[in-house]
Image 1 (cartoon, rainbow, N blue to C red):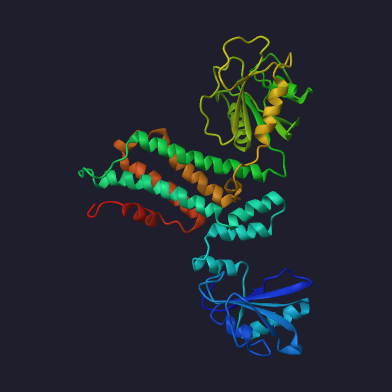
Image 2 (image 1 turned 90 degrees about the vertical axis):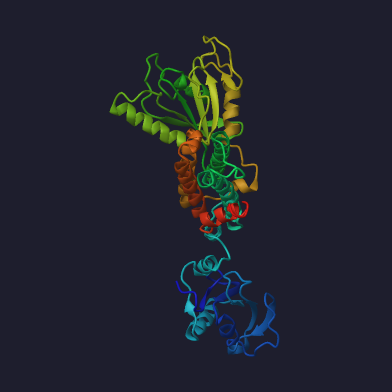
Length: 438
């Protein structure tokens, strides 16, 4: 798209209305708009309403002028406000095109704003998301994106990753300098894990608002014969899943709507966790992992609790449930739920907790920001890079170049979200804090 010509387009919705707006942007925007008036106003104050009349039939109009760079696009802009008569609006736009303006392409005003530094890519995507919002919550999330909340998040994240990268690279370049701090593996691991948690939280809340018009998902996970299917039936208060004393009865995921005091949740009974002894087992494990990735709540089910995961990288909420309370013994650890599908012990409270977690609303406006597939892909790249660091942070002492490469990959991925965060610019800012000559 060209930037040195003047573009024009209808800015208001098509059809009849109280007012129609024709917008221009480019070097000739003011002159083209003024030439359509029956008299040139004596004063042309920017960003103020100017009463005017069109040349033909003296139709009343309003004119608002914006001077560069203080405009939406960063160029000179003009808006002509006229009565909302479609044939009049089309005629006015045709006159502008005949006088030298070019018809703007889809999104070209926002494109110019991005190219001239008036907004980042994520804000431009927010404009489109607002236009296509289908619900109040979707509109709020799109508005947060349009107002730059994702941009601000990306800037904070980039600065933190950039600081880590600068310290790692300083350790490579200035190993013989006593006054240049080199980051330890322990500190690097702690800070990289904190950044990972911020990525996970953003994606978790994004999933929650996206499912506002649908039912959130809670999935039962555990070893074969752990009591998942019995718990599934008990929570639903009906017999939906087949129950058998033989392990491995559930071969495919079964789902049903679970009604809780907080609202309706889709409850999924997944196949038992098994080693990949066959193609069937591998396929079952793959399907289960896909279900877990989409879940809002993961419910780990075990008889003894010995095989509960001590940690999880999932962004979903996690419940650890000890099934078969009527026959199981042993000490209950903090945070574990003891239930019995036979006697009903703990079932009602567990059902309530599942609903509360699955239908929990984000607590902060910034957490409701809309993410699209492009954003999610870059977040996944950044998460993978940070995960490699968290898995073995002490490699910074033996392989600092590889750690620096992972940090730069994470930094570049976060920068791609907005299209304005340059890894070199961030590093320049960080290294400017070093001593002169270092």
